[in-house]
Image 1 (cartoon, rainbow, N blue to C red):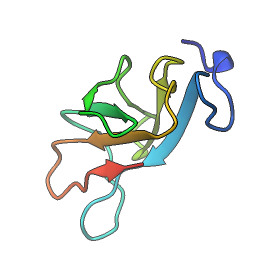
Image 2: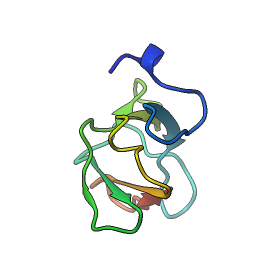
Image 3: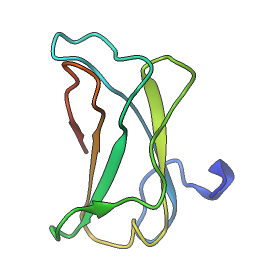
Image 4: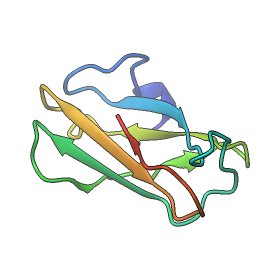
Length: 93
């Protein structure tokens, strides 16, 4: 999916690009992500792997994930992003 396919705000059944930052347990940004895993839960169902993996922007600690229209086809969408860097906190949206 190209970023031009995504909506700027989440919308049911429409591709969405979500931006975020990954932090350590002391609040600082984690740069150079390792062992990235992105999962989605639709309407409270079990988590499953996302079609696309999250992408770090350079080595900034900030990044994004492109969710497909299928992954956004629910009334409640929960996203979980984790990395294996030391002291990294999991993100849940």
